Amino acid sequence: MVSRQPHDDEGAFIPSRDLPSLRTPLLSTGDALRALNALRRGYGLPARSSPADRGRESGTTHHVGPPVYVEGGDEEHQRESEEGEGVHDVPTLAGGDAVGDEFEERTARAWLQRLISGKVTLVNDVGQRNDGKHGMESGQGGTLKDEMMDTDLALDDAAVLLSMTAGKSASGPSTLTYRFHSFHKSLSTRPAGAAPPPEAEVKVTLRDQTLVADALGGRTWGAAPLLAWELLAATTRRAPGGEKAGQSPLAPQPTAAPRRILELGAGTGLAGLALASFLEQQHSARVAKEDAANEQVMPPPYELVLTDHHPNVLANLRQNVELWMKEQQQQQQQPSRSRVAGRIDCCELDWYEVYRASLPTEGAPGTDAHGAAYTSRDSTAQTLPAAAVLATDRAHAHEEEEAEGEGEHGAAPTLTGTFDTLIVADCIYDTAHPVWIRAVAARHLAKPKLASAHGEQHGGDERTSAGAGPGVASTLPLMHVLSPLRQTHAGEIDKLHEVFPPAGVHSSSGGKEKDWQLRTLSQCVMVGYDDFAGVRWRSSRFAPRRPAEEEGGEGRAGTRTEYVYMQIGWVLV
Image 1 (tube, rainbow, N blue to C red):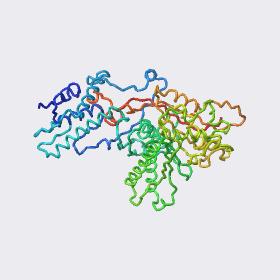
Image 2: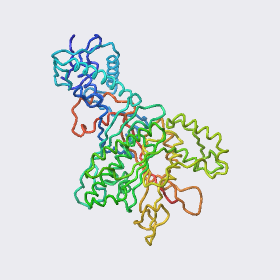
Image 3: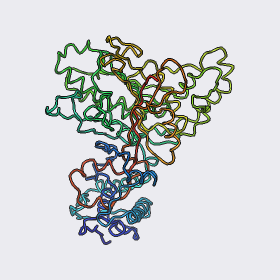
């Protein structure tokens, strides 16, 4: 058997040229492992260095950096938007172009399929050594157990790579660590010319579960880390559009009341848990600076409620909270602390039931303010388990009889109270969803207090406080919505803008007295990367890269995706 070594003289691994031939029934395990590591590099994945790295996918780390903001008047952005979603960043380096990469990717997938088909036998060559070029060693004179481990590792790795090319819908459960870098520990405004405060890192480890047809929330999609970064960094820079960013969910509270955060459609909980991690750091620093003995009498610095609807997603979400709790306890700066400072809860929240409960009896199941009637039958999104949809539909069949004499349809959800911050990351997959989310925000987003000329407070939630000028909201509770711009879901985004119009758009109600209404206070478009479609081969990854390109490169291995980011709050109109 002739061992075929990948070519390195041109600096790139080309599958159609360098993959070992599988036309013969025997293949060296060492050659297979080296080829698999080269494929990993082309796919933008970390290499495995030894059989001990079995299951490395369960320890993958994503380094999250700041998003790229798209200028509204940028012609290139407009042209890309017209061309549709899924625009790939495909540099033409190292002989790589879009057409060539597609061909090489097909070749690589066919090779992987052949390798795991059982038609090829992997054998260990006695005396074979690692040449150091592609990072994997086949043991010299190893034991039979070692040889079997090498063989199993190669087959397992080939299967993992093949599933990753098919996207998250084909991959199994995994544990991921997200690291958010380069935002400041101190979120207060610093004097001009002062040295920047020290930087901090937030780390969140969570579990992605196997994707099933009606439970998309079991995986972490690209919007969650992007929105988490945006919220973490909000007060250390100016917001898109030039306004001073002063409405971060992490900004210092003006009262002793805990900051309350609610995440809708939390999925794996990444965005909410990232905020909680930072708030834990803030509290830990405060305890270290002040008298630690007073910590027991300090109120909890925050309350985070993570919500979703599907039972499988909720079960995984609760596991992630437990994992986060253990990680936080291990990171405590004070050895005496055995618990986290804040409070985190998970609960089921059905947006439709909140919307349904907000309707007058006469409108059952009702027409919303925009003239559209919605029931569970109207939703085509894969967000509800089939059994739950069926149960809801059956309930509607008997709704008039059961709700007779009631002022509202159905019982209100168990979630109570108002929150300073609502988080919505990639949750809109149906034109009904913006309407339902508006009902949730109307119930659970705190209204701001206004400061009068005499310093009095009026017109809002008692947990907010004064401190601004007359007629100006001193604190502004916000709902942060980040949603991908996809051609397949253009109607949903149009509905989102319709339901939450800009703050300058007046109500058509014609009422004499002003009333609080939910409006979009600011919005921008940012670019992120999503790996729903699976990893993609890029020959340009073998070209020399600048240090800035090395950091976080793995996180940009997916599909370039544009997201609309909206800050929504209460406005008197």
